[in-house]
Length: 106
Image (cartoon, rainbow, N blue to C red; front, side, top):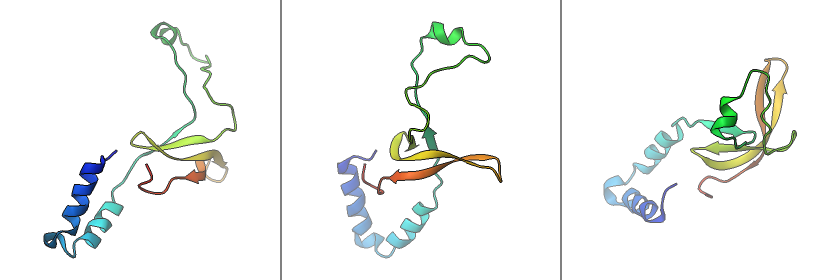
């Protein structure tokens, strides 16, 4: 997260005469930065002892029910929610967006 003071400084910097005409170029550069999105299906809290006793075919129960929306996160920040979908043609799992936060809303 970016704090307000830093955000204000960046805005002032971007609007200064030395940066005139560069904001469009900077925006284009920023738009191309790749980000990793996480789809969090749920969480579980286990002790070290419980984790050390896990075996193949054991089940860890999560704090969500099947069919509930999953959280979509970028850099640890929730940016939306979605439903898990399966594409039979490609045998791939994906997320159907059901809610997305506007950029900068957090």
